[in-house]
Image 1 (cartoon, rainbow, N blue to C red):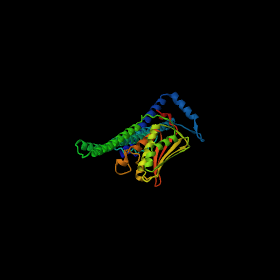
Image 2: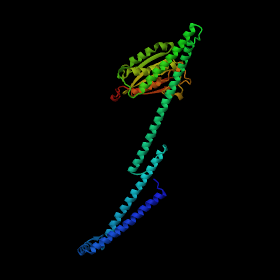
Image 3: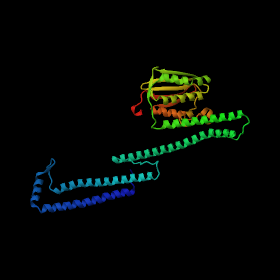
Image 4: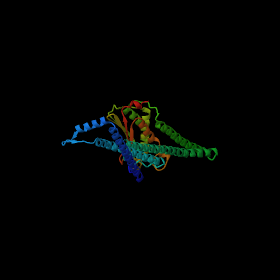
Length: 379
C-alpha cells in the first residue's frame, strides 16, 4: 500500500514527537536515578563493589559507569516503543484506506476491488472484503438474470397463448356472426378452433410441468426400474407414429438386466420428450436408437437419430425455455419449446446431467444418471 505525502509526513511527525518525548523521559529518569543513588551512601557503595567485581571480554574491561547500562537498556526500550507506535499508526492508515475503498465501492463502483497487498491479518480482511463484494455482485447478477428470465417467460407465454387464442376468437366470431355459407364451413371453423385450443392446452400443460419440476420442493417417488423393459415400452408407445414416418426405433442395453433407482413417471417424461423431438425434427432420418450402458455407479442413456444435423450455433441453446431451432415459431413443428427444458430439469432432479452432440451422421442426447439416489435426494 502506497502512502500519500501527507501520510508520510504524519508518520514522520509521529515518530519525531515520540523520540523527543522518550529522550525527555530518559533524561528525567536518569536524573532521578542519580539523585536517588547520591542520597543513599549504602546503595552507592554497593554499586561500586558490583562494578569492581564485573569484567567484560578477554581484556577484563571494567564498566565504571552504571549509567552506560541504563542508557543501553533505555535505548532498546525506546526503539521498541517507537517501532510499536509507528506500526500502530501505519495500521490505522491501512484501515483508513480500506474504509475509503469500501465507501468508493458502496457508491456504486461495483467493478472496483481493493488493490492492496498487505501482510498478516489485514490482508485476510482485504481478501475477505473483495470476496464478499464478488459474492454480492454475483448475487445481483443472478437476481437480474432471474428477473429477466421471468420477463422472458411472461413474454413468451403471452405470445404463444395469444396466437392460437386470436385464431379461436376469429373462427368462433365467424360462426357467431353467421359469416359462413354451408355446414361444411362451420365444421371447418370449429375444427380449426379445436386444434388451436389443443395447442393452448399443450402449452399450459407443459408450462405447468416445467414450473413444477423447477421447484426445489418437487416431490420425487423413487423406485427400482428395469431399464430394458422401460425402453421397450417407450419404443412400443411410439411405434405407430414411427411407422407412419418410416422410422425404426431400436433398443439396446448393456447389461440387459440393468436397473436404476429413479422416478418412473418423470424419467418416462424425459424419454417421451426426446423421442417426440426425434420424430418431429429428424428430417430424412430412418432410425431412432435408445441405448443404455452402465459405467461404474452410473448409467449413460443415449437417444440418437440419423436425421438432419442441428446447427452448431443452436446446440448451446437447446435446453433454454421456448427455444426452437427453426427461426419461426410455427406450432406445426415447433411445439411449445418447453420439452427439452423440462427434460433437463427432471434429469437434474435425479442428480444427473444431459447434453447433446450432433454431426452429419448422428444427433445424440446423452444422459448420465446415478444407479442409486443419495438419501438426501429422496423425499
